[in-house]
Amino acid sequence: MYLKPSPTTSDLDEAVSAFVQYRARLFGIAYRVLGSVAEAEDVVQEVWLRWQKTDRSVVVSPVAFLSSATTRLAINVAQSARVRRETYIGPWLPEPVDTSSDPEVGAQRGEALELALLLVLEKLSPTERAAYVLREAFDYSYPEIAGILQLSVVNVRQIVSRSRKRLAGEPRESVDALEHRRLLDAFVAAARTGDVASLEAVLAPDIVSLSDGNGVRGVARVPVVGRARVANLATATRRFWQGTELRPVQANGRTGVMIYRDGCPTTILTVAASKEGIRRVMWLFNPGKIAAFLDSGARTTAPDFMSAAG
Image (cartoon, rainbow, N blue to C red; front, side, top):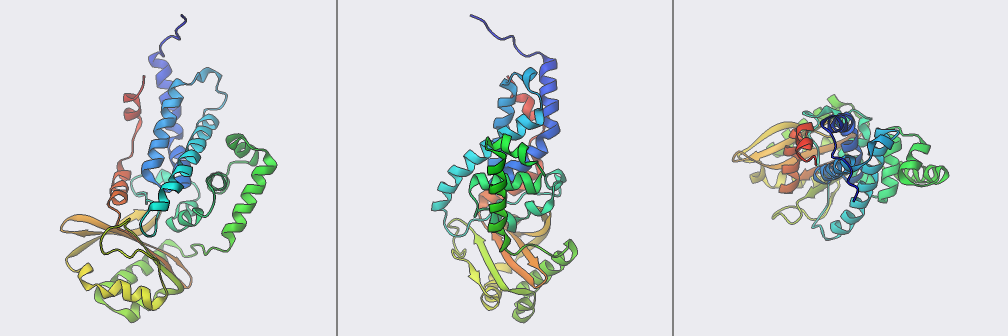
């Protein structure tokens, strides 16, 4: 029986070097397709395992191979995730990622990383989302996307065009980082003091508040719409703000707030804004997603991949 010789240390070093070089891109693709830090990490880990077992001597382009494997796995995971989310209790929000400790994640066209857009992308099918992400966030050519998705170039062009049209009517972030931070700070200050008038003043007419708790007690299970209702929600429960500590965080390239109670992180608050004011308030109460955000600051590096070698 013929047995392929075990990979040499040099072979593994080369495999690790190539993988680490593109790892941030691979995570970026998987995360934008899935909206989940944990699921994206699982996809990247699986791609690493496949990369080890591949006959790399016949791979013409490592980045093409790795991008293809990542995208196809992410699509498969996204298809099963859509089924699981049908039983999710209340609004579902993407898991934010800490971009302060890992700026490479947001290095490619930041717009495609913002939570509000990731939420909008949920309206697309997994294949549509993958094609859109590869084109808009990573600037892959249509022939490259066709090769990754194993579709014709004509089909890919149609998919991307159709996705753009479906998203064209959705409001997009249009304020800079300083204005975004000003609006967030004004919202928090008014909410903590119960200043409804000041709170309504920074809200856009089409404001929607979304609370992701998946059954956590006391969390709104339906979207709250309109200035008056959102302002009342943010100020009505004064006890929510009492005894809390607020710390700024960098979530998906934008400033957010981590809310601590008794030293424990309980909530991540983020907003999306336009020139008309805050149009989305996103409250993340799901403990698993908060933990994933905190863990995203210390994401897997090359030595951990090496431990999985063989």
